[in-house]
Length: 230
Image (cartoon, rainbow, N blue to C red; front, side, top):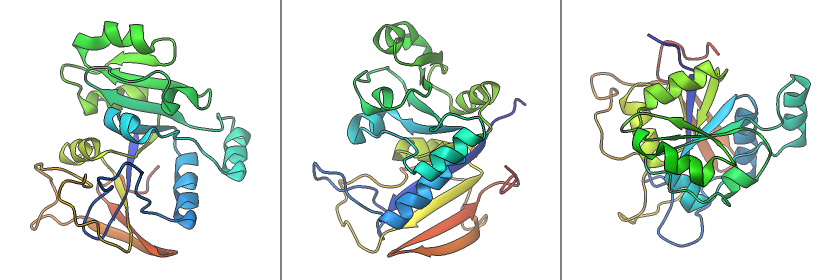
């Protein structure tokens, strides 16, 4: 079996499991102290991955912000910000999105085999477009990233991506931050969707750490035998 990176899933959610509400503005689930923690985790990774819907909905920059963390990466001979990766079936992404326009680090877009050519026409000037399979296969994506030198991958969502990584047992570690409030809207997006998850009543995930970060709580789960090895 081909190698894959060590994969860390990262998500912030409300007490009732929602990662956003239905308002136009982004729901702030975390706080400054936790943003700094996430920035440090990003700085320790070779690439950051989000789904196409997250790129469209949240327009994330996915950069390392702290001058200290950026300097540490440069001192290790790395770019100040890890490579940025997204996964899309149809390639329907705006080249003007912050994902493509912020930082000069490499951007990689994995798309379905049938849409590679049209995605290259749309985004090829701004990103490396890679055939991810038909439909896109996340194990294939992970293995390809390993061949590109990605040894530690941070996955920041959204819900569909998190669900797929978990159901396919590709995640080694989960960082789940719980905000001290409820959303209470069933139309809002949740941390994960329906799926056949390996962790269930008979096979419980291992809780490796509980840490208070300001007014939120970080739950860190070990999800594979490789936990903590990279």
